[in-house]
Amino acid sequence: MKDLTQGPIPKHIVSMSIPMGIGMLLQTLYYFVDLYFIARLGESALAGASAAGNVMMFVFALTQTLGVGTGALVSHAVGRKDRDDANLLFNQAVSLAGLMVAVTLVFGYALAWPYMRAIGADEPTIEAGVTFLLWFIPGLALQYPMVVMGAGLRATGIVKPTMVVQMVTVVLNAILAPVFIAGWGTGHAMGVAGAGLATSVATLAGNVVLAIYFVRLEKYVTFNRAQWKPRVDKWKALLKVGVPAGGEFAAMGLFTVTVYWITGAFGAAAQAGFGIGSRIMQMVFLPAMAVAFAAAPIAGQNFGARSFGRVRETFRSAAIGSCLLMAIITLFCQVEGEAMARIFSQDPAVVGVTIGFLHVISLNFVAVGLIFTCSALFQAMGNTWPSFLSMGVRLVTFAVPAIWLSRHPGFQLHHLWYISMVTVVIQAALSLWLLQGQFRARLR
Image: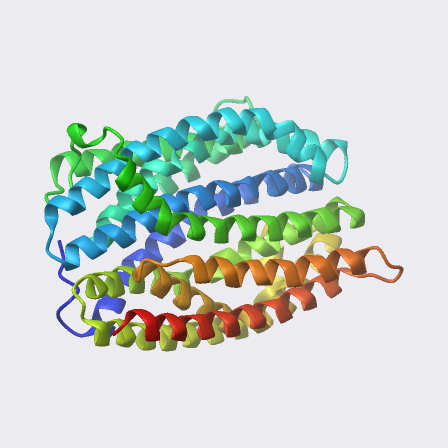
């Protein structure tokens, strides 16, 4: 366990965010490995896998529920120096993760066809998306235990083991993707099914390695079967903090599905271009996300220890760092947007959509950095409803005008990107206002 209630806040942020950023980058890279090989199968395969991959947003909403709840409450217990409660909360989260694995498998397979028929641009896109999902769903289900184990470690100030495990999964996925997708070495190419299988196998390996670490090396929070029996009070406490955070991710998923539904009218190339652009955006967000992820346990431990001045200092340091990083990334996307797009596709129509998306959306990256930092502080204080509210406002202010405009003649894709840019600024302003209110109410 690392005591984050002592020592310089900026130093803690840097020391935690660097390995976390590396780990998140590695985690993202294996989606890019899949994307690279799937793009070689044609625009229908790329559009289908990209659209199907958005199911991740809804699963991530549930993993966020567990991860945020676990991270916040365990960090509070660590700040209070209450190891027994930290262990009980962690093991209750493990049992809840087991339940969510089963739920995801059942509903994932039941809804694969209806989901793709709702948003697929054409029949080949739908077929490719369903094929990908059938092999990808086990990997999604296995995210829950891995997220809980990572959140438990992060709450205690430990981040390097998670980075190592993410490195293992990336390397394994990078090896398996060309083997399964293109048939390298076997002569049996599975296509988009191979992309889903490679991710599922790599995620399973990551769970096994992280579980071995807990059994053999972790001392502060550990597996305890006796504490896996469901405790209603602890599950309620975890969900009270986690559900709004999960709702925030679900709203992000609805936002993305709305874009795919609208772009379906422009054909598979438009959906493929948006899919590439959104994946690139997720990757370039990683430095600011790493800062926010580091800020949450730092502020959480200090909140639990009632060191409220250090909570405010964590916000200031993280906000400055996130905004500076995002400003640099904005410039990079403006200059190198086309180069990044051409890594994944040479189709002029697909590349054109990706470039247009990145050039407009990157203009609000600094605002996104502020949103990430505010969300981290809401998590640290154990009240994630403000984050959910601000994301809900963004979803409504985007979806209503976007759907309305898409039904009028002359509507173009770039109109979507500009609406999105304006709504992000609204969300950032609302998040800052809500955070100041939480500071006044909770940091007394």
